[in-house]
Image (cartoon, rainbow, N blue to C red; front, side, top):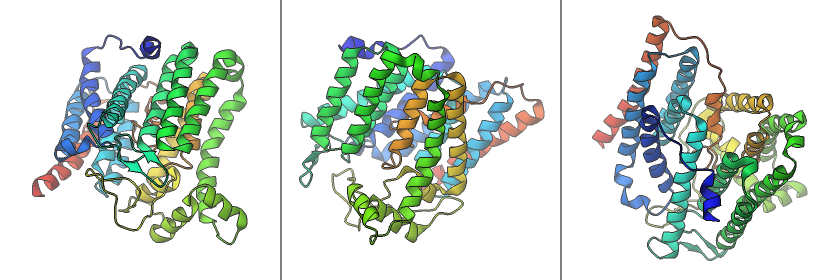
Length: 414
């Protein structure tokens, strides 16, 4: 069964340029994924230095691609620089590095990226859960809901990581995924639910596996119908506008909305409180959300709880309308590409993440969502740049590096 599970994610032979990307990428993904666990305490003092080291290695790799740079490289670099500049305003260098890593990914086959990503987050998941069960790291227990954190610093981190892993396995194997593998993945999902009581993530993971079973039987019919792709595209705007709208319209005097708020564990109430307190601006703003997550010592925050468990409202508030609008346009283009290429598997997986985002904000990091980054692959190959435009591209690279340089100086001062 183990051989069947990993058959679809065995590594292909990698070129020097692939290795030059995957070595810093693997290191970056490893340290960011493990930062959600109680292993983070062992390297937290070096965390940002590792991110900068990975970014510098990737920047040096970009020098090679300047020789044959194309118009799409200039377009993507400009978008990446704008997004990184917005994020730098609130000094979120983890997300800044994420944006740069995604940009550098454009010259690497995504199928290889997906395999490496699945292996790393799968290894991190098994290591963390196994270590918690063996008592090597803390397995925090929340008595109110009888839920285990399984070595992660919050109960939802493990199941959300697993949801992404299942999506990657299904994407890589598609119709070739074995029935025994599907059964194994579903059983593990049930076991995670038993340990963590993460109902939402359990339901989405189980439903995705069941859809995969359906596709194994009748994929041709689903893939040929444009209606499914149109629904996927529409789901983005319906989920975004609907979830934000109903949060802002929430009124405890309305019996339906109050009942919905209780079912959603006060998500509507907290979202509305956050909106009234912080609003939504054009650009990023420093917002301190206080959730149930634990620090590296396993202690919860003593401040008053206020957290937005809605991907769309959360990131529009933190990063602003400009950032959110650019990401929405890119994701829409990706969904349109799915329709054009009749990729029902990817369209379905993206739809699940879009739906999940209404009730969960953990959609931006690659270890929780390895599919939104596919937006960078939607631009077609175009003509090579002339020397003047290459100079502009070099200027953008310098701008990216200066953003990191600003932070390096901050590290030295503190």
